[in-house]
Amino acid sequence: MKNFLAHKKVLLGVSASISAYKSLFLLRLLQQAEAEVKVILTPHAAKFIPPLNFELLSHQKVYCDLWQEGNYWSEHVHLANWADLFIIAPCTLNTLSKLANGICDNALLATWFACNATKVVALAMEENMYFNPITQRNLEILKATSTYILEPEDGELASGKIGKGRLAEPETILKKLNYIIAPKPLQGKKVLITAGPTQESIDPVRFISNHSSGKMGIALADTACMLGAEVTLILGPTPMRPNYSYKVYSVVSAEQMYKAVMENYIEQDILILCAAVADYKPLKYSENKIKKNHSQWELSLVKNPDILKALGAIKRPEQLLIGFALETEKGIENATQKLIEKNADMIILNYANYPNSGFSTDTNEVILIQKNIPPTPLPQEKKENVAYQILNYIVDLLN
Ligand code: CTP
Image 1 (cartoon, rainbow, N blue to C red):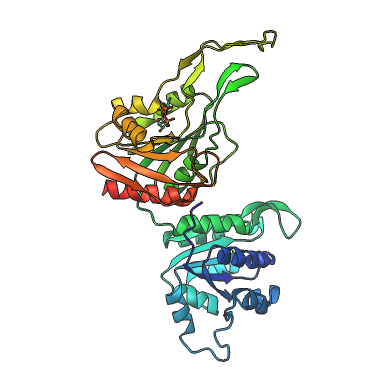
Image 2 (spheres, rainbow, N blue to C red):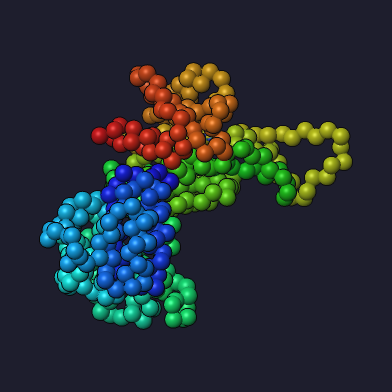
């Protein structure tokens, strides 16, 4: 997951809930994401978690009382102007109601109303309080003023009851903040991505496949989603899962991947074929397990459909078609040949035999190959950062 929180200035507001202890963990996670964090507590929150805890962890003064000694009168305005992002976690019903109705009787609220940054509330309250029609009406008011609502989760509540109301886990909140803060240059664009390997069955227990993990394709899909695209991921068999919520078609064989792509390609603006499709499948599938009663075994294979090539033949001129090329030698030559033969707009070349590159690794090093311009190498980085660079490059091509 590409980190968009680095160097962002984050105000962490904490209101009075038993779940306020989780905001200490959230503070740590934000710091690990290299965000700069300042904390504001409501006076009652300070009864749950003494401000000193936040002060020691944030290495910053903690704000709690508008009338705190040493504060100057416009401290809340300075804080509000400082922030890129303001998250209240946990946000109690009391604080939520005040936010929705313009009540400004503590430092956290005064800063909130003075703040024009991206605003988020992560709710925590008892289930009946959450479903109360007045709470729901107040949530609608906040949504209408462009506040992002992080819904409470189901589980055990402070009362011992099981229900909806728990503050989301700090990791979940961090992931959502990262999504919210990301720029959205792909807003309004539809992007289809294929990822992972395919498996071609020989018999009920055996198959032909390759070492693809799906990491690069999922990084591209996650990042495209964060950048605002409507993403469709056609995913081969891999235990890896997307980090965000978008349309995912799980497939096993090349035939299934081909079918899923053909059913979905028409409405797409951008098609990125990252999957390591098995080039061949067994000529015949054996319904029963093949026994090892011969010292040698020859398996006849037939070619699978080439999905990229098929799309290159039918795509609309305004659709951007991008393929990958995994090579071990003559990379530029082979990738250029694929670009032309498959009628793609760009081929992303990577090497299976470079250190920390290609299949299964967390990093990758790619070269962008296009017609009539010199190859563009990108630096070796984590796959999510490579995905971000590729998508940024694509955004430039669109403009
Ligand atoms: N591809 C595809 N369908 C296939 C094979 C490949 O859509 N049956 C796509 C891949 O997703 C990738 C591009 O074609 O975007 C190049 O894949 P690669 O495996 O590097 O090359 P191949 O075309 O399979 O050729 P070769 O194996 O001879 O290098």
